[in-house]
Length: 311
Image (cartoon, rainbow, N blue to C red; front, top):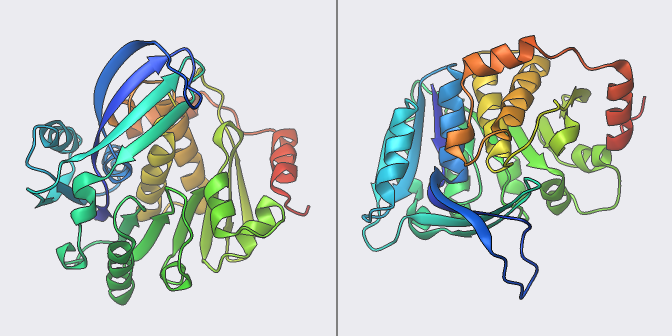
């Protein structure tokens, strides 16, 4: 079983020609609401990957925004451990998506800040705990400590970007970051490979958008080239990657296979609008991968050079 502990938001999404600059007003041409939040998105991705029962610990308000979030999670087959925060609104996110599929996101955490260390359910039977940083850092650290003490693999998506204490990183088995988040954790100058090498984690994964991803595990490097898709909305692509990766690892897939599955799931999520609504099923990922050739040697060399990995 997989436990995801983290945030859940209702996303308010406006599509526009471009993302506004400071002080600029842009007229949008479409508006919709979608269940979102990094934790909830990742829980849906885990569940749709079909590897194991997925549970989620989350905090919601007593307002109308909570209902569509709970319905989406349950619809994906996620078992809920809900903390109700009646004095806080359910978390919200305000997202502008450009016609070029770029996005800008502002999050109002609300009830997500109500998750406390004592809210963690019993971990017996769980193989992996997946965490993010949209809930209080003290709570995230407490959950990681509890998981480490009970032999549960800790996967941390260090997003949104923030500086983390060494005692939290010491509890992490698998760290997933994008390039900006990596620089926040490892700010000294250097290549992506050098920045990742400085982080004392057994397995570190860096997502590189359309380029793909790279990973370092026990001193060895792994590269996965990106898949070409017609991107519509990149919202939740990273969350989809994290959930699909954790699901693959929970079924004891080799790291190379897990990265390929996660990269394909993240690419497919970019072809659909919204957060949880964009996350593919395992059947869709498998069908997509059957149409995709293995990366060429040239593509892998280009990716290796981009990351600064010595040949």
